Picture (cartoon, rainbow, N blue to C red):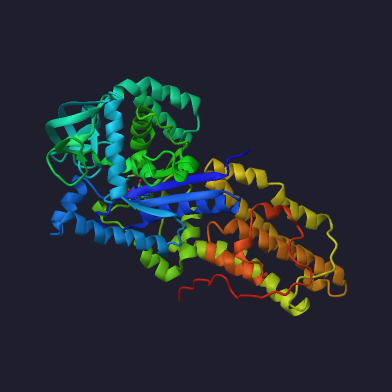
Length: 512
Ligand code: MSP
């Protein structure tokens, strides 16, 4: 039998400053996938949270004259609050300062140690606190008298200290074998090639403890060391499933994860270090790591250190949460970088939401109100053009499922836009207003249009849940009862059922 469980995660965010649009983007997209899979009958576990240890956080707390835990409590709360504001359906929110997490990390450490993959030595090399990452000599260049990473442009510093190491080099061939056997482990394809060539170029053992600061989980049996924050952070994906209790129903049902959705900046950690740690600990690696692009502001990645932040909360206050969710999914080609601006959000709201889907709902419902007694028509008879429109949904259902399983979000939204466009064209071409003498035809056009509103609303639900709920309410369809499968049914709506027009779905933005 097909496994109907689905485990999806976002990265856990650094609470070094309040959330910005880049964070909102990762979370919203993950929520779209989670909602889609639930709609398709899956039992979904959707995890997000905050990554609270390490030097970056310790420094940020110092700068704010707070102790690290108080500082994290405060900022982690803004991330947790954001899950509500973004209308996320996460099932858990993990903080790495929780006991359930630190116990899991210590346990994993002990397991790696027991399996002979940890040894004590000395680290000598470059480290970026901002990325919490070690860089090789050939990944660092001079810029304005400073050393920076060529991958992230962040400043690196020279570190020489005693450190525990993980025998990453030992796992190089096993990893290459794993990529080979699981060709879709890393998506999109272009990023997979980057990772494979990095692994092929030779993996060095990885420093997995630091001694020069104290904010982190202490190494079991050597309290002078704190565990490297990435080993700590990555473990969140299993600590939230009750690891080390691998017999717990959460772990058994949901591990290995179906999808770690991350930004492309943290691919190396997820696609190399994480599966290596897991293989070493005799745990199956996740099924998929998808590295999406960056939200840019101008030409640059949006980030706090660059000071080019668009605040998601401000945008939501101005335009609405569904508007933002739709805009990010539509405007940023998934997998690539994307520029966003207030001008383009306004034109997206007007052209896609108000003039396309919103207009179709409004014209159909107002027409039915005036000409069909505000009821779902009873007498109808589908003609070829009606079947064509209705079937254009059902015939594509397996493709839609496949697109989502391959994180082909661009195809999914393209499909919805094309069908909304076709629906408006169908309404125009069928011209129900000219069929007042032929009531069966008029009723058929309205029945078909109402069915299409239902189908479009179901497909849009993962992206714009509040508005889709509203349009379904207009049809008297309860959102708790909708399923993707019901798109195949062209006569779902009860004949003679009353309609309940909820009014305009999306206000047009008019700039005076
Ligand atoms: N704490 C680590 C992740 C640990 S996961 C085990 C981290 N945190 S972060 O807060 O710096 O960034 C987390 C994620 O936020 C990025 O991977 C990416 O998914 C998202 N984004 C942050 N800035 C972004 C943009 N400007 N654009 C799109 N997403 C970006 O890295």
